[in-house]
Length: 95
Image: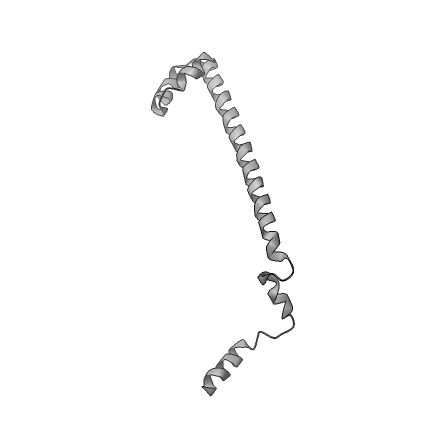
C-alpha cells in the first residue's frame, strides 16, 4: 500500500514510465486497485443515472395530469387532420 501512496504524487507520464520497472506482483496490485476504482465509479455513475431518470419521471408527471397542454389533443379526438392542406388552400383562395 505504500507504493500506492507514492504514486499519488506522480504525473501520468511518470506512472506509465514506472510501470514496466515494477515487479509483476506490484503491477498486479496496481491493476487490481485500478479495476476496483473503475468498477466503483461505474456503479456510482449508474446510480446517478438512475436518480436522474427518477427525477425526470417525477417532473414529467405534471405533463400528464388532466388539463395539461400535453393532453389537449385528447379533447379533439375524432377530428380529421388529413384534410388540413385543403382547408388551408381554401382560406388563401378566398382572401
